[in-house]
Length: 86
Image 1: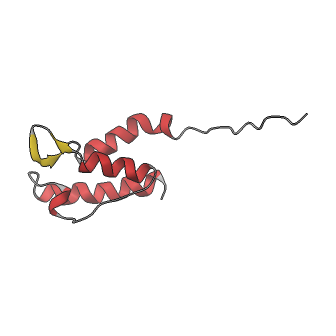
Image 2 (image 1 turned 45 degrees about the vertical axis):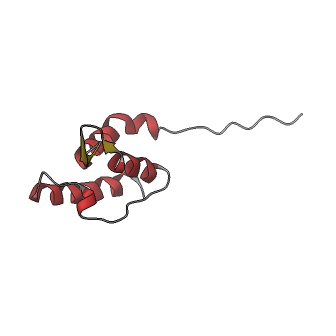
């Protein structure tokens, strides 16, 4: 999935949370997982909040803001330079 797909998915999660702002995604899903950036998002949503163990460290909207802020640096084009053979 690309970043836009993740953002659409998280907007859906935000709509779920809007119905009950006191709940977390764990109340809707038994398992969340991901690879690469999905794993990062999963960790952000699954990490326990030290001040309130019933809620995650990050909300879905905070994850979206994180990606809006840091996404351009995380996903900027990288050039693959090969060592020249002599």
